[in-house]
Image: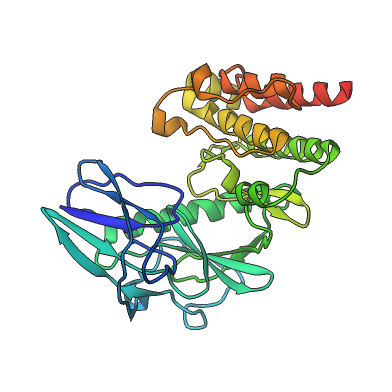
Length: 337
């Protein structure tokens, strides 16, 4: 049974027997490291601390496979781009489990489910699809997710509440370029900054609701709405990470889709968590896909007296049929202030 160690990722992938993900872990102290999630073939999750490991660099550029979509964007060719360099894995045996440890590539600033974020310069980052040596099915899945994200950014275009998309970074791998929001994600920002004024927090909440209404109007469901997928840039908020998103036809009836498919309304649950986090200046996130149900009252924090209290609660009880209804409620509330 193969078990993969991956630290600082925001998702856990439950793998079939004998499959693996590309395990990237940030630099760790020699004697102590962060908790690592090990996912076994039967979906069991084990938590264990990293130990001291030695690393040997290995260039993965030969394992890259050209994606299926041609592009005429003004982007660097693969010959001009620096391919990701990962570290040779350290393998240990534990009973019938094989645990694989690998280190992140240079200039890595974030690791997600589908991609690795690396700094290009002070204004730009590149999002590379993960690469698993000798595992084409998962490599194709990661490339497809980044391609999906590119297509969504292209449809959305420029919007004040969405991170700026700057084109294709590498034609060979499908990596994309995005603006570098150096103030980090909202989760970390809340934990490291004093609470802003109520006026600023209200402005942020209205901007986010308007942004998700715009995303919805472009026939897109984000499907991974949570505080660490909202970035802070120059004192305002930017939505990011559309790799898991669903893009519907431009003539799709979104109200009908939301009425028939409860999962299409999970974005609203996540948005309620973000609104609460901003209003209370305390991070809270409820993962619908982990619990496989909407939250019960005992799973939720107290909202009494908070900014947008009624809207938060309505988001959490599946009280909105779609984001349009949430947007209209938010506008009505703002008009009463």
